[in-house]
Image (tube, rainbow, N blue to C red; front, side):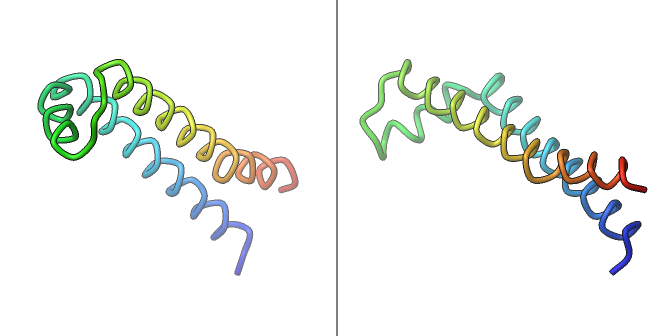
Length: 80
């Protein structure tokens, strides 16, 4: 495996992960009531709990992208 291949892999992983994060955000922005109604059938959540869970989930997902995609990518860019 070459350094260029790993670099390209990490770039595409970051792009795909940020795409998923953007879709998640847009889905909550435009279809929040629909998603809440669907989850409300399965779980007893207030709207505040629902918002908190999704906001926290997006924050954890974003931290994961930074730790597992961007930091290794920056390290590879520094050493090459």
